[in-house]
Image (cartoon, rainbow, N blue to C red; front, side):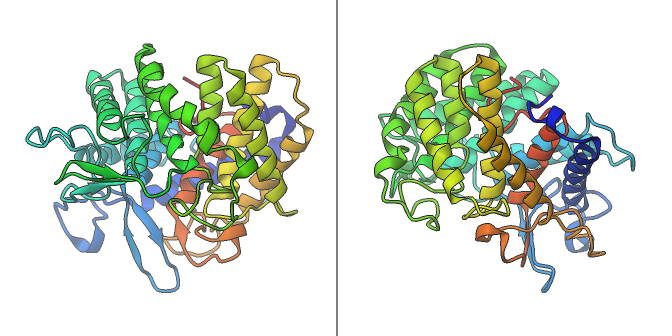
Length: 393
């Protein structure tokens, strides 16, 4: 049970659980699956794939990439364990989605520098954003935990090997682009968001009950975050996006969750001090209605705050948390206003609008907010959702 759950009324817990369930229904309703193939195409190579975003005004949409596919699979597995009054088969959708996710992992031994990584969107693509591939590894670790099937842990280890040796530089800092044809990666501006991907090492280590990847992959990247991720001298701009600046304010792509994990793994006070500074920065950017600038940031901040509050409780830290609890609850309640529950449109209903700062432009239902919201609301309602969290492993 989340540390926040006892503070909520029964109605609010029910509302959060329903929000998570509706997010899951949006994913299921828009999955390429037998009986609802996209465009009427039978035997589609996209079977199991979810959609990335949908524009209700135009009907435009596109297929999911590796990171959203992974989060959807993880969220649906979690939803399969909670009360489900309308009988949606979330586990079956998760299993079908797993098949498409696995098809994206690069297992061509003729190109050893790419072996173990994830192609970005389709099995034919020759490139990757390694941070997105890392989220694919999150799912591999959870799939092993859920099923006990050795293949998933083997694949997670293969990804970690690739991420450390070829998807990152010699010092262990992740690239932001990788070309499978040339076997080369690059990084324009080292940014804090890249270290959220280091949770791939943490989850794989936790799933395997082996500290190897904590020391070989997780620690080197987190040590560099101590410098790259310090907001005191960043000269940040609150609306710049990943790859444009050193610190992506609002949505650090779960680098703050990685700091919680690093403190749990190494008990180093430096990670805790940096985490407090970064959460203070986010609190200072939050609007009175609970929203934050940058894509998906309202949900990212809420998940960051929830993990820190869990850490305070678990380690009995002396922090005063009233302000953070208030910020978390305002963000969670604002997030509910972004969920589509009115349109009788299969591709929109249950999804959460995203891709605008402060949630001011609800032009598209986006998997980012839908996936993040699903994980957040499951936890607030008192259920398990271990991915994009340092807890539950």
